Image (cartoon, rainbow, N blue to C red; front, top):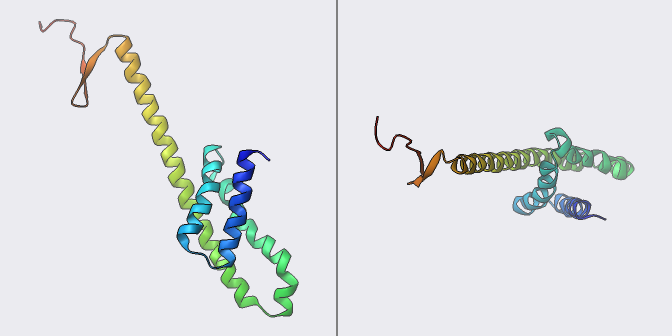
Length: 142
C-alpha cells in the first residue's frame, strides 16, 4: 500500500474506533486532520474530501442493520449518526483550513518569485524595514 493509502486507511480505522467509543474531540480531530490534509493537498473538492464521513453511516447500517432492528437499538443508532454528522462538520472545517493554508503558501511563493524577478531585473534595490525600495534611475534628480 502506498503512503497516502496507508495514511487514509490507518486514519479511518482510528477514527471509527474513536467514534464508537465516543472519543474526545482532540483525538478525533487529529485523525480527521491526517485524512483531510491528504485530500486537500490532492485537490479534491470539499464534497469529495469529506464524503467518506457520510459513507460511515451506510457502512454502519449495512453492518449492524439486523442487530439494530432485533435489539431495538434505534436510539443508539441515531446518537451514533448524530456524532457522524458532527464529524462531517469538523471535517469540513479542517478541509477549509487546509485549503486556506495551501492558498497562503501559494500566494507567498508568487510574491517571493515576483520580488526575485524584480530584483534580478534591477527594478528593486533592496528591502528596508520590510518595504521594497524602487530603483532610482535619476540618481535623485528630477
